[in-house]
Image (tube, rainbow, N blue to C red; front, top):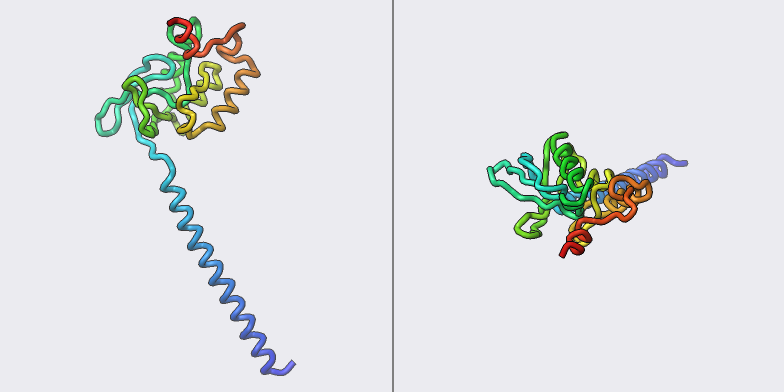
Length: 184
């Protein structure tokens, strides 16, 4: 191979390397923009200090700005307090979960009976999922469209039902909304 031919081959190789590098940079730039767009769609969690529980799916907390919020947990419905023994157990479990770390809420803007409907997590663990795992909650379809943990909630509920945990151990398990409907 002549010296000029080798030089031409080297130039072609150099151009190929530059093209590959340019394509890599373009892809990295596009990926960065896609990641930024995806992160912009992530929910905005707010710190909130737990005050007290009303029942197994409703509680009060104080935001960093001092506002007190009455929170209705998104997507889960716990037994009513009058449903023995699971209503009281759900409330105690919620209170216990709230003391396991820092509380954060994500509220997509929906309300229910003057309560703000929110997802809640303590120490980065979803509170609704924990209540479902304990067999102390059903899924509430009214909030399904905004449920940011839908897949996890469905899977956790199925396991609790299959293992007959909590209210699923009862002969005729009754979710809170069914109990309220029967009481009318």
